[in-house]
Image (cartoon, rainbow, N blue to C red; front, side):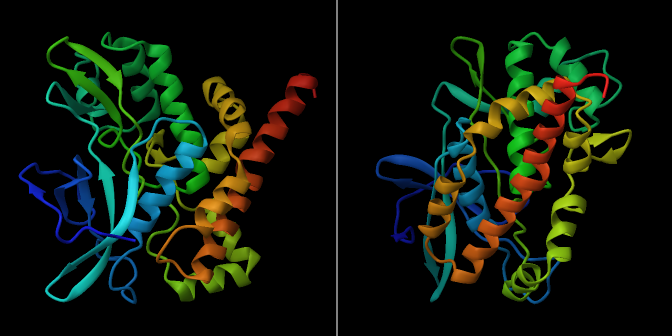
Length: 299
């Protein structure tokens, strides 16, 4: 258990809508400390579980072998009130700054949409048209993220919360680690909702086949993870599924959840169940369909 309350503060500030954020030094390294946000969609909760979900979501990316921001869970006490917080390691340096994909997308002069437009065709066009980073590497990261976001149920991956590290000294751009996973794993589900979902397979299926939707849009509509991946229509997505799915080790994920502090046994069962069923019903089924079609193209 880490108590972040008395750590040295820094004046660096961080943007973002979900919860307050401060900069602290921990073990001689800079971290962004994120506080739990208000559960606006669930009035029965004082605060959302976003800090727990940030921690778990980032560690699932790590298990899948995708570079990701280091996260730590701990507490912060102010005015006698203790809150669970997540510390996210600041991966910038004096020479490097974070630049989101939206800023890169804005460099495409011929695009009809601004950087924050999340229409899939426009995003893919921008990846091919930009010249700052290898387009194939960029698309691979995008689709790898999409597959893991489908697993963890991330409804808020947009052009402003993934991107690059820009080195002002060398003028080079590299892919930044994945960050901002707090909108995963149903952060506004309280224990009553969790229990109801565990008790009713139909409630689980709603949260697998219907919600949450991706933050990316196709033809103006937010993408349904299951429908899109299961369709097998996007070759790059299919390739990412083949690449990422074998790396998703459910034993490691279960151990991660078992060792996560601050959460109840009910929460642990909920996270394990939802991740296992989303993997089976979205990712496993989709890969089985793709493999079957490859074996029998005329079928």
